[in-house]
View 1: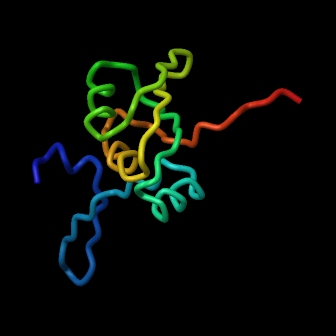
View 2: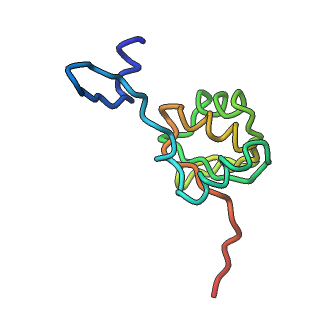
Length: 109
């Protein structure tokens, strides 16, 4: 493990042994969305991937993970994508990805 990889780890010392445990990506999802993706990893869903900044790097990572980019949202730097649950869970490990949420219809009251 490279030192740069340690920034996303959790340290646990129990019984005098040091364990390095990778931080889980579920923290980047709403809990119910994560549960759905775990139960249906091969089903394609629409999602919003919030990122620190829109860049060719993050777009390439999304495509490499298996996402189809539908839109680039600039007000809150995000990508609207269609992807399988498995692809979204893989993309969540990218350091520029802040949050992944389901893309849902928004209606005015």
